[in-house]
Amino acid sequence: MSGPSTYTPKNGFTKWMDSRLPILRLVNDSFVDYPTPRNLNYWWTFGAILSFMLVVQIVTGVVLAMNYVPTAAMAFDSVEFIRRDVNWGRIIQSAHAVGASMFFAAVYIHIFRGIYYGSYKAPREILWILGVVIFLLMMATGFLGYVLPWGQMSFWAATVITSFFSAIPLVGDGLVQLIRGGLSIDNATLTRFYSLHYLLPFMIVGVVGLHIWALHVPGNGNPAGVEVKDKKDVLPFHPYYTMKDLFALVVFLLPFAWFMFFAPDALGHPDNYIVADSQVTPLHIVPEWYFMPFYAILRAITFNIGIPFTDIVLINSKLGGVIAMFGAIIVLFFLPWLDSSKVRSGSFRPVFKGFYLLLVISFIGLGWLGSKPADGIYVILAQGFTAYYFGYFLIILPILGKIETTRPLPNSISESVLGPSATREPAAATMQGAE
Image (cartoon, rainbow, N blue to C red; front, side):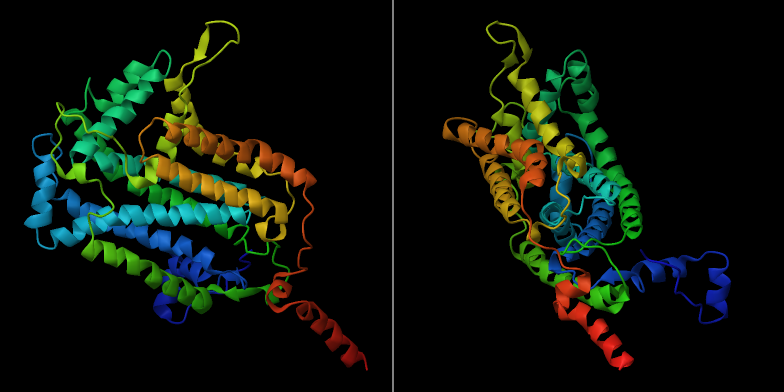
């Protein structure tokens, strides 16, 4: 996609550097002269936004780690110490806490954009799989970090979530003790979670590097879902898309800054500002908002699965919930092969749009239900949304691609931007030349 390098060293130092460590050539070919489809819309700016947010989380996390004490006796007080007594501590802690929410908001938009525009289709399967790996690492990092403030909700959410692993046959109890570092959430848990929470972001950086590499092999997808055919279809990444990404980033930072400066605690749970107490259970235990869709799926499985007309249970409700929760993410790995349609972009798939809209509604609904008690109508709704979530990937996409009548695709990216005249102009010019 990127073609041969266009970088030319300008002076003696850059020539010397280029012959020994061609990092300037890499930057130029990857982020300056990199040919990018000319029809990318603002949904494609979230990759740059996510890269920025990853840097924010790592920088603020490193500073916080300098003052945090990972012990049950001191963890909560050390967070309060950072907020009240460390220079700029309130801003740094708020940026990290609010940044986690903004990070996940951006990644969910990025994922659903990829689903709508078919960004997972060949030849971009590895790119998509690496993206799902990053999402998994983000969820693990977020969960580990949620425990560290050692508030009531942190403590009990960790207790409940880790206990679900005990449902795994044979190794469940041992796995729970391994995760916790003992029989309960305590000092050993904090030490483990703190170490892993510090390590995983750097693993994410590594996978992000592979993700960008995998992107540059086939090149960017685009809203039309057609491949680049000639130079008219592309623009250099700089200045066209660097400026577009920068504008989108500034807009994204406005709500980020508002929450960080004016409502840093609005996205957290009030009980998490009470020190953890193993003797007092909160009335309603919930994780952070960005985990709630999967938490709702976990709790939606309230029934056992067994052999019909017998009392033999093969999968109890607890194990079924764990399988469903992880299955909701694992199914994304197989999306490139589950979608049977030859058309990438949802813009040209009229029937697909309706099912996709229902998927978005189901996911948002699951997020809302994750914050509600696991009883009554909430469970029934969660089961319905969960059934549709899995049905969309496992049933609807494989069948829809074979029976749906799609709209005609443009002949090129240029045509999708400029209209049919973009492909007629060269022919007209040729006729005039012949005359």
